[in-house]
Amino acid sequence: MLRIIIQAIVFICIILQIAVAEEQKFSLEDAVAMALDNNDALKAFESSVSASKSDIGISRSSLLPHISIEESFVRTDNPTGVFSIKLNQQRFAESDFNLSNLNDPDPVSNFETNFSAEMPILAVQEYLKVKASKKEYQAKSEEYGRQKEVVAFNVIKSYINVQTSKEFVGVAEKALEDAKEQLRIANKRYESDIGLYSDTLRASSAVTEMEQQLVSTRKNLMVAKRELGLLMGLTESIDTYEKETEIPLYESDYYAENSELRKDIKSLELRHESAKTNVEAAGAGFIPKIGLAGNYQLNDKDIPFGSEGNSWLVAGILRWELFNGARREYERAKAKHQTTEIGQMISGLKKKVSLQVYESLLTVEESKKNIELAESSLTLAEEGTRLVQKRYENSLSPFYDLLDVQVNLDRARASLVARKNEFLISVAKLSFESGTILQDIGVEH
Image 1 (tube, rainbow, N blue to C red):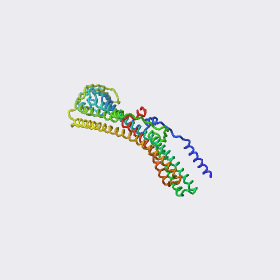
Image 2: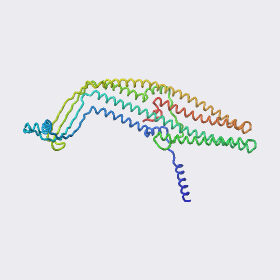
Image 3: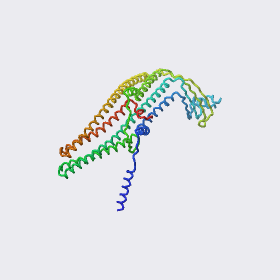
Image 4: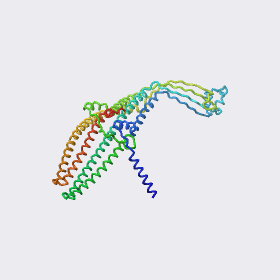
């Protein structure tokens, strides 16, 4: 018994906690802004952009001094080795010229420490590679900007979907209300001996069907809220404000002009410039490289990094690779083909974007017209339902006529909600295709 009481208390607490917990509400602008900060896919892409920026440093490192330190140990009785080691240790003596010492010397040990540095002076190919990596980073940044627009568009669609799901719940509740009213009328007529029992059964069936429809629409609303939260980088459901979403609609020239500056187009154009630079870099492989090198050496017979003997060296280097198996020729040919490929991709993308904007403009006009038609259909359906209900109440129409017009009314209500949803999404898609979606909703990021 005690166990049952405890379980009941726990169950009540859970129910109360669920009832008290309120879903967070966001405006469209705030929802998009949060998604741009928290969306997991965007965070991953941001890391990709940062990795691309690191490539600039990797390329630039070829133009900076390379400094190294090396410590080695050797023990040998090789005649020439012994001779040079003693010289480097600065302990070569007159006795070492003795022929027996020269031909059969005693083993010697040496700790050799080398501090070396090399600095490029003329390295055209490396400089061009730095330039190309900068262009690639800029292209990646523009691509990241386009990904932000993709996330914003998905959030807007999800936000509108939540609002539409709410309206569908309202439509289902209204349909259930109407079905219950028809059941009340059918029962009243049956109790007054002027109606059929079959009418009450049909009305009861209609009420059950509308209840099932309401359960489904509420489930869809809960899923839509959770999907919105997921896009915003959250794990909980997110609610929207009751005010209908508004996205400004401009003249067609506004979208056509801005679409030419879309971030994915700019990204490809930057990659095209980078590819041209790679062609130059491949050709620069035929230019000699000039640099400076230096070395400071310590030698000691007993301890590492000892300085029993020391010496230094400074050198100028000219390195000219005359033949490397035709690798440079193939690299330049490859870079030229890649440049042509990207150029064609730019041309194709611009044409595709132009078509997408044109199609989106037509879709917006189509959606506006469909709303007008849906509103007209709803007015007619409401009037038709009202007339048939009056006729049924006066025994001038059978009950199935009332059911038919009610189905038509429910369909008209749902159709109007769907048409409004399609219009809002079509305007958002037009802004997305033209690359103006963030500025159109007033989100600067």
